[in-house]
Image 1 (cartoon, rainbow, N blue to C red):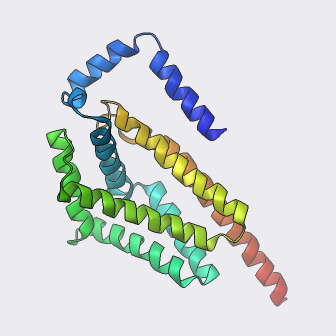
Image 2 (cartoon, rainbow, N blue to C red):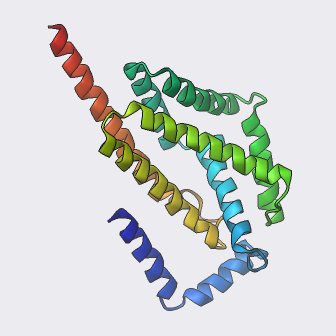
Image 3 (cartoon, rainbow, N blue to C red):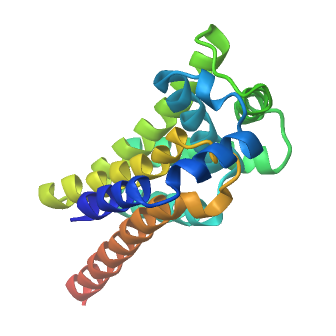
Length: 214
């Protein structure tokens, strides 16, 4: 249902009157080099921009999700999940403190890509994409480890992936660098639902543990 609604919104926008004219104006205003990029370069730029805003710059909703995930991993006493989520959080905080970290380098690479308006398949860009991809997999794996119910694991993983894909769709638009925070709405909704589910599980399990003690 979530995926169908997202697809319906994209299709309706594409077929709406005046869409071609808006596309032409957006290209001239925001991304003159957009027509010269192939789909893989557009997706590469979109992945860098999404990873940079989500992890390097890190919105508040991302930090809340990661902190709740870390606390829940502590509650479950899952060492692997604690290490994975803790590593990501530590790097984000280090970046915000202005320390010299890998995120600083990744932000620099994303800035170069943004200013040049292109994505080159070289070791620098591909390494940045690979590292962001690794961090996302670490978060997903930590989430998978702490959730006990199999259906819940699949559901929450699906939500995370669909939310990320929903944001990545903007890669196919010349407004990639102009649309700002609102393009993260699909990811915000996904992480909000996941965070609420984790808090619910944390609360119910804590209550059950207290009852067992009594």
